[in-house]
Every structure is written in C-alpha cells, then in structure tokens.
Length: 261
Ligand code: URA
Image (cartoon, rainbow, N blue to C red):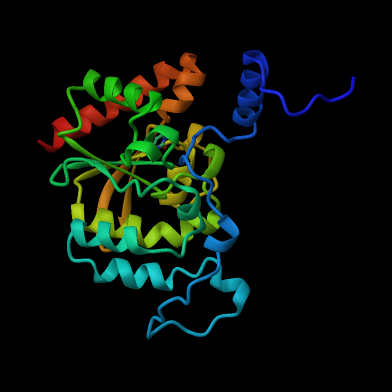
C-alpha cells in the first residue's frame, strides 16, 4: 500500500504511534518545545578534584572521585541536595526531568533504599509516588508505618530512560551521594527494596529471592546499620503471588522495630 503523507493522523493512527513510542520506552513528554540534545551535550569542562589521580578517558566514565568529593563536602541534606542538583557528570541527568532526592522524614529511624525513579517520580521529583509507591504506602501502613516514620531514597537520583535498571557505572557514580544520604540520616534500620539495591548495598551477586528476609549489618560510609532486603513493590504488582513473602519481610521489620524500641 502506498504511504499517504501530509494529512492529519486519524485518532486510531495517533494512538498506534503513541503506543509504539510507549513500547520503545518513550513514555513521558518532557516539554512543549523541541530540544537540540546534540548542542546540549557538548561536554562542560569538569571541575578538577585536587586529590583525583589522572585517569585514562575510559575510566573517567565511572570515576566517582568527583561525586565522592561533593558528597563529603555536604554537611547537611540540604547541602547535599544542592550539590546533587548542580552536578552534571551523570548521563542520567540529561534525560531526566529533575532530581529525585528523597521523601519522608530526615529524622526517621528507618531508611528505605529503592532502585531508581520511574516516570511519575521523575515528574514529581520524589521517590515512590507512582503505583509501586502507593503499594509501598499500603505495605508500610500494614505494620503501622507511614512516610513520617521513614526516609526514602534510591540508588540513583535520576530516572533511567524507559525505566531500565541503572547501569553499574551509573550506580558507582551516584554511590557517594547515597552513602552521604545514609550518613547524614544515620538511620537505626535500613531496608533494601528489591534486587538492584540489595545487590548494590550488600555488594553481592546473590539475587533478592535468596537475600530477602535476612538482617545483615552493613557499614555504609561511616555508618553501621542493620539492613533487611525485601521484595520491591513493583515486583509485587507484577507477581501478586509473592505478597506472602513480602508480608513475612514486613513482619521481620516490625519485630525488629519493636525489639529496638
Ligand atoms: N521504584 C523505585 O525503585 N524507586 C522509585 O522511586 C519508584 C519506583
């Protein structure tokens, strides 16, 4: 069939195009006007960190010495948020709408570490505000918690395009930010939500199904904290049959909170 051009799309055709974009991972409109990403991606010279050794170009891609220096210089969460918002060295930032720093109570005893912002989080600039976040709220409520009792962050603070997993490079680059968040909050208990944060925090290749439900003592930055790996709410939305396992993990968390009270 010959292709017809220069006519408006029918509603059905427009929907088909949108569905095709969505399937390809383009599921969020980031602005009304086109952006020349080639012009925007001309690299800015990076500020030199005095103690950073000279590294070959390939290694610089995930050299966290700059994020480590920025994180170390932040003496409060507000400082850290500003430093992270001003940092341009992580490729995720270029495609994200905004920084997704944290949500909840910075004085809370419990810190939750998720994977990465999704599309709703990217739009609102807060972790866990989409469907998975709503389930997380219900899970917390089931054991008497809410967002005033926890502080929530992610392994990376910018949304990976198309909701892919953050790469090891991206996580290594953002790790000093996460560690400084943990140091500054100094939680008494921590929860790794899902496979990606569990592997990252525990430094293991063992999957979440074997890690979940066990308390392990972690030293992150300068802070030592008992940490529990738990199934991710997004996983539970896809696999509701696993909610019984998640309930056991929630009970383990509640028991620990009561034991420490
Ligand atoms: N999933 C995550 O891991 N983090 C979020 O902030 C939202 C969904």
